[in-house]
Length: 192
Image 1 (cartoon, rainbow, N blue to C red):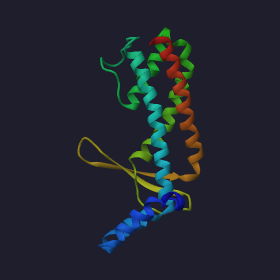
Image 2: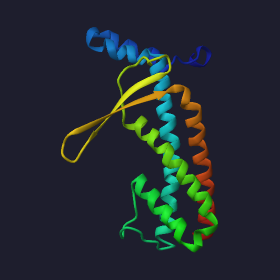
Image 3: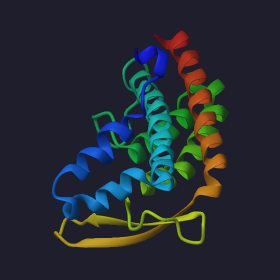
Image 4: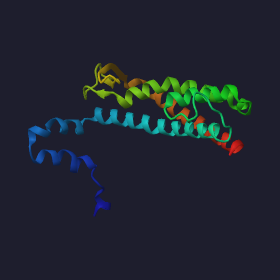
């Protein structure tokens, strides 16, 4: 029977219906969020950014592994870096200083430069909290990024994401993933 009729979209038979059954006032706002096309589009953008960034950063992890173990490069400590900013700094130094990596230097530094630029937007989209479901000025989502300092106090950063800039961001992320994967293959072929 399902094949003949097709399956309903999940939110049409679970999301809003389930929330409307009981305690209507309590779930009214959440129901509106689930039905908002703009909100779903915004969530899709965030998901696209996260999936593509994870692909890129996993390639960086492979570069660090190659540089740290087979090439035994140490910079600012005896442990391999794990955060994005430390990996970026570590890899820049490795590609600049190690003769074995000289033929990959220009490509790697170019990829890392682009990644540093994209990382700010990615960080804001990942960690900021949206302050309204409806976009402001038709295309812009307002968000706030609260960061807890070591003193226990928060700092706030207002973030505006203009959905019209997404095609460029998407292109940059796809490019990072493709180029970094190619570099990983080249490094693995030579050093592993």
